[in-house]
Image 1 (tube, rainbow, N blue to C red):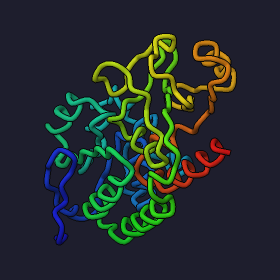
Image 2 (image 1 turned 135 degrees about the vertical axis):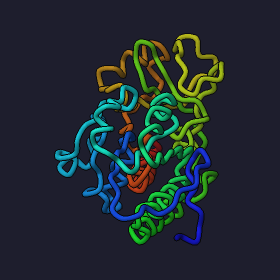
Image 3 (image 1 turned 90 degrees about the vertical axis):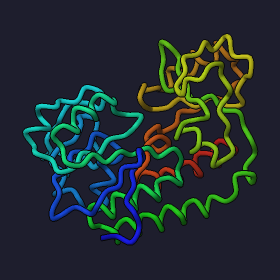
Image 4 (image 1 turned 60 degrees about the horizontal axis):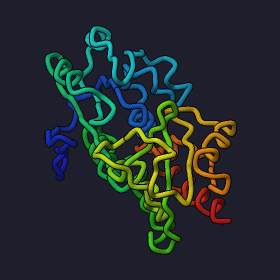
Length: 268
């Protein structure tokens, strides 16, 4: 037993796994984290979007996508644990899995510091507390090195994740809270959607900076003139590695360092 309760994002209390686990991960960033925690050999299933780390995952069975999960394939794998995410997986998928999977572990990091709790949760459940603690120290050191948010000049940022239609992120997202580490604030948009559709020409609060994410839409240099035609040629537009800003788990350690370097290059 662990001294600290292992409680997931929906309040379910977990016990440390009894013996080796059979894990299916339906969350790409968590799949990477599980491997970095030394749990690759216990991973029996993953989505087609779980692509990091590349070589170790070649031998792991695919069970569909994050939204279109192959329940029959998962049943055949006889998992003891399935790891899900509030944003990336459907509620009906979780309900169906609960009928035959002993343990569903639900994750929902809402900001970079939430990864510390995620490390402890998975480390405690799967008996890799030392590896989880190591990652926690690395992330804490990266965050400390970044310094106080107020030390960075505030900028209004339009972070685009999709084209046709244009889509951005609201302040209530993991991506926005990553950007806030360097005092970049999402441009306010009407409505309550966390990933709203927008019309560039109708923005009333123009951004100081536009960021074109490499995922989920694969923005490239050729899209920059298209943005500037809508917002003006003087608008700075930069490509940004989306996985470094949106992936939580172990990627957050490198992601914070990447964001610091990126912000300094933009400022220069």
